Amino acid sequence: MLVKEALENEAVPISLVRDQLLEIRKERGKQGVGYAQRRALDHVEKFSKLSGEEAGELMEKLSDLGKVSPEIAVKMVDLLPETPDEVRAIYAKERFAIDQEKVEEILAVIGEYR
Image 1 (cartoon, rainbow, N blue to C red):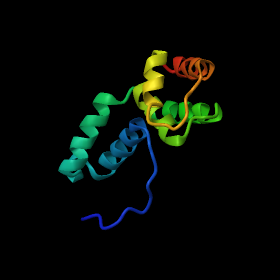
Image 2: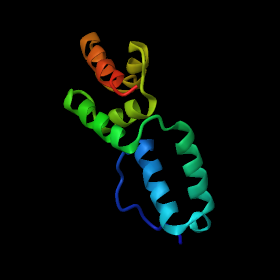
Image 3: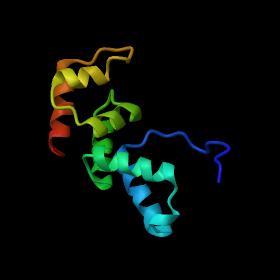
């Protein structure tokens, strides 16, 4: 089956993608999953650091902090930055600077999930 158009375009953490791909594989059996899905599953299993439930909770907490868009929250959940410089690197493409207090808040929230 070829995909002809995207129905939605939403940023999703790789932990949630892993859970969805595992569910698809469970429904279809290992033989029913295509090459691209097997490769994607292999990738997300290697690089996801949280469970899907934890990723959703962390995204919600980060979004509640303010100045954290859904796209940035996804990057933070996927990367789990440990230092202020890593957080600033995620914000590098934004049109505003993030202050040290907000960086520390973000790191504190992320620290709960490490």
